[in-house]
Length: 189
Length: 281
Image 1 (cartoon, one colour):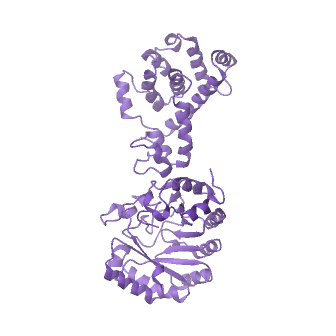
Image 2 (spheres, helix red, strand yellow):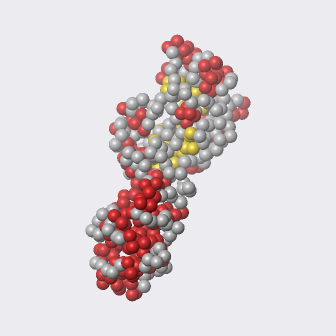
Image 3 (cartoon, chains in turn blue, yellow):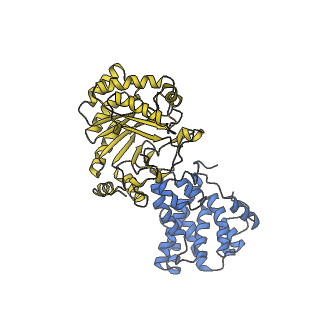
């Protein structure tokens, strides 16, 4: 059960209403709506970082799902598992990113660039201070400066959402749970 | 994001933004009216605003271009220092305070009269019907007697009194008798406001037939409370103990420039205040 009750469509504050559309905006928006002046600046920023951009959909989902897995954010892992599948990742790759037993990223990912990205995401999520010199050098070799900037923003926004969703114990949508079951995935532990 | 000096005054001149800033000074009340917007009663959470805080916000409001203040609750005079606080607010901008007028006895009446003397302060007193039975049905036993005894005492002390009648529909004959009553106290018709019961707060939980209203129905008046800044004094209503958020503007209330900026952005896309459908103010 969510620590904070999501604000319903009927009770949506004035500044939050554009983010509700015609119905349920999801628990992140519906809880942030408690502080509408923060919602109206935070959501467009978060949305811009997570939305389609010059970085490939698949690449972004690798970062989001891996970061969420390292942070053990059940909400984000469950919510992004179907998204990652839709982005073209195989079930084995998604299981590896989720950190499931018997699935490792070295086996699942043959592309060295993606392996580098995963190693870097691991260090961004886990590390204190800068990523290691080795991983940083590999990232600089594999990605352009603007890509590193955007991927870093993506990882850090994901970290923000990981802590937000975990701390507030946001509930996973019913449709997502059904989709996980249909794709043969257990819910994140 | 805050708003610049001048933007508020311009919006007020254009009729986009109301000139008054409201304070919900407190939420507790010695009455428990059946249609109360805030479910006020003696033992509810007080959600009280600090006096110095209100004065600081009043000064900011004046700097921004707001032109008057309102104080409501709950019953503001449940707070013993409220007469002095309102006097301080009125030294910043003309102030109206909404009251049930049932606490003006003895030294408290003296306190109010002394503090308000010579200051631009109106006390807006609730009186809903010309008869005890009809009035007291919504406002509680003996309220009519208490109020009709109090108002002449207030007028005698040269306090400026307005009457507010909240009703689902007063027939012509009753309205005429009510007007005769306030005129007999020397209160002119322009100082008598008749307004509908709004289906918010306690009224939303009953079948009394209040008006269903949203932001477009209320004048764009900034309202500061312990829970945040709201669109209109009809905004920070309470239902089943929870503050409604549908008319919440910002949680941040200080400095006033922050919620004022948000109000302006919303108001620029909303009906002009003087075009509000129900003219609820």
